[in-house]
Figure 1 (cartoon, rainbow, N blue to C red):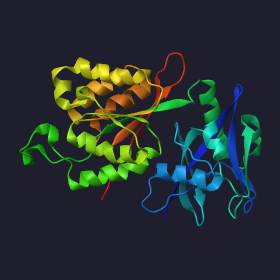
Figure 2 (figure 1 turned 120 degrees about the vertical axis):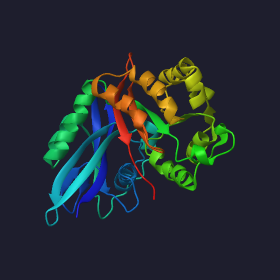
Figure 3 (figure 1 turned 90 degrees about the vertical axis):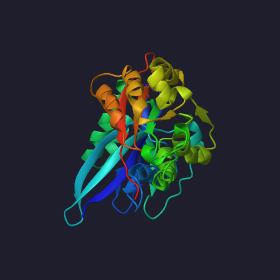
Figure 4 (figure 1 turned 30 degrees about the vertical axis):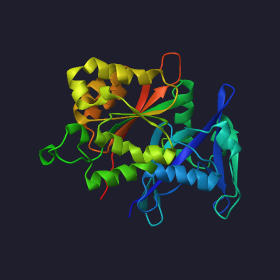
Length: 309
């Protein structure tokens, strides 16, 4: 049986260096990054966030996606551990509630070099090297821009009403509810959506959960994007100047204009990944990471594919 798990490299600024959070397991007498097995019905992103809180007492939102580590456990079973990097804010640190327990004896913030020496496993050292390199390049601290295609809607040929009011199917409503915790793992704050019913109702459960207002942009409807794509482009470019992480929800016919606009701020493989988002399935999304430097650009694109029964 294959085992799936997830973890986070929590980091914070320390002058020109960074410090990372390690946990000490007394049972194994080892030092590692907080991680744990995926619970039934849980997405790995949710696993990562939950495990950090359970093991280290810190609430985080996912940052850049890192490598997936593979090794053998038990009786030769394959274990895959997905990792993300997350910057821990001062507010999160102030609210930290770690208490030693039977699994984790202690936690410690260490400089990158001290952590490299303390880590018990080579695969963790390789992950830390990846994080250090991203920090040197100015690509570790990012903000998220989530591009979401609305959930499963009533087929056009089965709807006699106004196109703007075509609703989600029951499966789409279930998708919208299931998206709440998955999106919350990334924590987008500025929620921008097409005002058409199927887009609004896809994002509404998350907006209610986080008590954030939906920002309606008619330029993101499939009709307006067809009639005046420049207006759609302008609405997307408006997000480039925002400091908060954001979510943009729209329709499949509008995705080519949206992705071409977003891809103008990316290069190479990242640009290709953004352009490929025209093929998003209903309820699927891509998390693009925007650098924080003087010339912000997308430095990563993580496609999140998932299904709901």
